[in-house]
Length: 455
Image 1 (tube, rainbow, N blue to C red):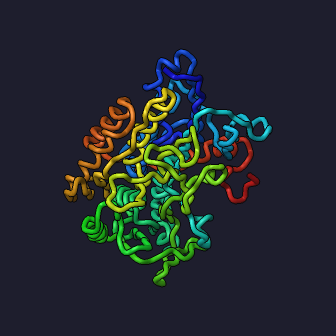
Image 2: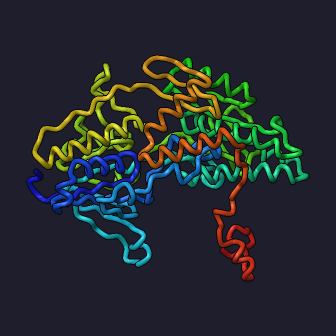
Image 3: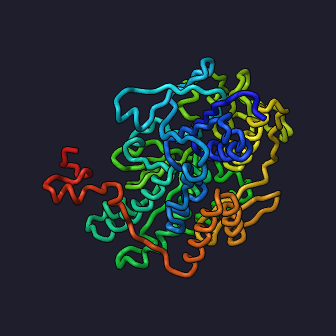
C-alpha cells in the first residue's frame, strides 16, 4: 500500500519513458484506480519509435505506422502531455513545460508540480561544426527522417533517369553516409539493397552507376559486434561496391560537395549523418548532478545521486555496470539496457512508494545483431559469431520479440510474410512533406517548396 498520494512525472516517451510507465501501470494498478497515484508522461511525440526497425522502414520492408507505438493506447491509465520539458527545478519539484497548447495560446511555458521524477528524455544527434552540414545533412533518428530518406533516394534515381546533365546525374546517384555505428551501417545496407532492386525498373540507370560511400573516423565499424565481425562487414560491403573509408572524416559539404579528410571529393545530393548522439539539452537545464559527458549521475538502483525522489535510465543516465570487471564502468547507452532498466526502474519506484527495499540493476551484455540488407547480417551473441542469413534471421527474431505489444508483433510479422511473397514497393511519396502544395498551386499560389515562392 502506498503511504502517501504520489504524482509521478515521466519526462520522455521513448524506450525508458514508455516501458517505465507501462511497468508502473501494472505495479500500481490499485493505487491508480483509488487516486493514490497519478502518472504524467511528457513526450514531444504521441508515440514511441522502435528505432531498430527504422532501416527496414526506410527500405520499405515495414510500414512506418508499425515502427511506432501510440502512447495513448498502451498507457491508458496515464496522462499524456505532448510537449517538452525545457527546465526542471528538482529542489522545488517543478518542471517547466512547452506544449502544443502553450505555443498556440502564446502564453509561454507552464509549470507542472510532481512528487517523483523519472528523467528519460533520450538523446539527440551529435553534430559537428562542419561547413554545409546543417544545410544539406539528413539525420536518421526518427521515423520521419527514415521515410523522408527513402523518398529522397528514390527521387534522386528519378532525377538521374530524366536529366541530360552528367554532373547532376552523378551527384544524384552518389550517396554518402557518415558514421559506422548501427544506424549508419544498417541504413546504408538496407537502402543500397532497396536501390539495387529498384534499378531494374529504370531503363537508363544501372547498379554500377550508383556510388555508396561510408565514412568512419575510427579504424573499424560496428564495434558492438566485435573486431572480427566488423572486419567481415567491411569486406561484405566492399563486395557490393560500397566504398568504406576508415580513419577518415567529413570536412565539408558546402555546395553539395562532400570533402573527405583523405582529399577525395564527392558531389552528392544525399548526405546522411549518423555520427553519434549526445545527451538531451534538458539535462543541462536541471539542478541534478551530471557527468563530464553531460549524463545524469546515477546509482545501480537507478536513482540520481544526491537527489531523493529522482530517477533516470537509458541514454540520459550514467548507470554503474555492476557486472563489469573494471571498476567505474557504466552500462552502454543502448536499447538492450534501456528496456531492462525501465523494468527495474518501474519496480523500484513502486518499492520506494511502499517503503520496500530497492533492486539493483544488473545485466550482462549478451551481444549484438545487425542487418546489412535482405538476408544479410552479422551477430555476436553469447560469444558466438554468426554471419549472413543466420545472423539476419536472428536479427529479425530478436527485434520481433522486443517490439512492444502483441498488436505490433503481429503486424510486423504479417508484413514480413507478405514481403516474402510479393515484390518490393519502390514508390516515392515525397509530396507527403508538402501536402498542400497542389491545392495552393490550384488556388493561384505557389508550392511551399518552390524556391521562387514567398513561403
